[in-house]
Amino acid sequence: MFTPAAIEKLAPLSFGTLDGDLLLSNDAGHWARLSSADTADLFAGTITPGHPRFAALAARGFLREGLDTDALAARIRHRTAPLFQGTNLHILVVTLRCDHACRYCHASRLPLDAAGADMSIDTARQSVDLAFQTRSPNVNIEFQGGEPLANAEVVRFVIEYARECNRFHKKELRFSLVTNLTRMQEAYFEWLVAPDVAVCTSLDGPADLHDANRRLLGGGSAFAAVSGWLRRFREVYAERALDPGLFHVEALMTTTRASLRRAQEIVDTYLALGLPALHLRPLNRYGFAAAAWARIGYTGEEYLRFYFEALNAVIVANAAGGDLREQTAAVYLTKLLTPDDPGHMDLRSPCGAGIGQLAYDIDGKVYTCDEGRMLARTGDATFNVGHVETNRWSDVVSHPTVRAMAAASLLETLPGCRDCVYRPFCGVCPVQSWATDGDLFGHAGRSTRCVIQRGQLEGLLRLLHDDAAGTTERLFKRWTVNRPRVPPPACAT
Ligand code: SF4
Ligand code: SF4
Image (cartoon, rainbow, N blue to C red; front, side, top):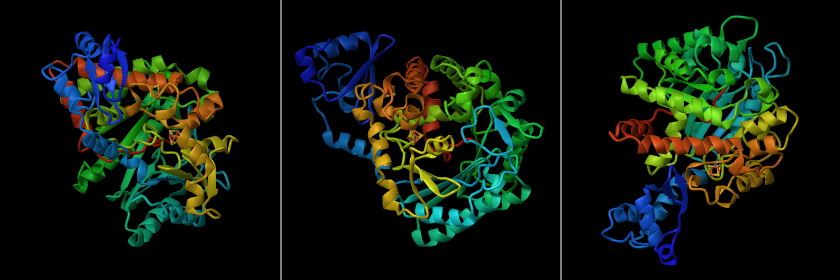
């Protein structure tokens, strides 16, 4: 343990252990891993000028001697900048109708012929008008459902109307369409292939797994539809010689119990379809997934085993000449290996609820995030913070619920998280805590989410540590630079 003299030599930091080594981190997002010999020197206060670890630890702000507080403050300002930009992600739920019956659907879908399940043009216009009141210089409008292309008329209207509004507002405007692609049509390429429009779909793996998870109502194969359109998108981009760094279609993979033994096949499916990224994600215990948990759920530890099996398959594929990025790892690695923080809504402190994102439901009700909206669809309107017709921007973003969410996701104050060595790279979700524990603050340090996130960070640090030749680190660094546009975390349909 530290001697009093050694403690006096340390700058503010958090510490933990990993495989017998000591891990250090600080608010600037620096981290270091010390062997037991170096740990003994740190405990004894003998890491001073001339010690082989002194320069690196001092440069990262772990030691008082030579501490450059201006550099640390600049790095903290840079990494926390997304928190102060204002709300930039605006999720428009343009319909609740959908032609899939996914085993884990969170969205409380309705059948394709359901009445009163679409956002009207008027509500869409009011939603865009409210979204443009953000002080953020960036406005990203994400279309969610149900299946948004079941109400393609409103999707197209919003794209055209928002572009028109932006002639006055002059923001950095982008759109993300989150679609299962079964209602895609050739004619839609005319307005979907544009530099400001990103397309994100779901692909759970090989045909039998995808079709079991994502059943197409009325028969037929959802996999055949999605893989066919994924190929067609790539053909269209290639025919028009569009930059694959800007024009690409991304997919998200949701893990059910049936996926756990099929990591390699899932990676192979993504490689065969030429997708640039695989975004692995665990199930959230909301909506239909909560009711089906006994059949499709798993523990955090089981998910971690699957996750690293898949990540290792991605690493091996890249070593063999493939080009595939795992998106969750890319977010953590950007935090771990660069001065940047991507500002991912669910992996920051505080989280993006209200202050980074808002969700606009078909009826004009506004929620802190899409997860909050989904809970409302199951009867719990806790996360409703206004209505596009009756509320001003200031009413919505300063709503008491938005404030409570910020307090409940501020890792620096949360028991369990505030002293955790992974805090600079992590995030908690008050909606998830509310849904599972009935409490916004939940049990952050002990939740399944914590098990998974801590395990992912530990696993990535192990891969970096065991990488004598430096090949994994070179690959990981490639994932953190010049990354194509990243769909937000809510990207799933
Ligand atoms: S959620 Fe878990 S891993 Fe993340 S900061 Fe909190 S205690 Fe640490
Ligand atoms: S409450 Fe959860 S889902 Fe909503 S923004 Fe925060 S972390 Fe994301």
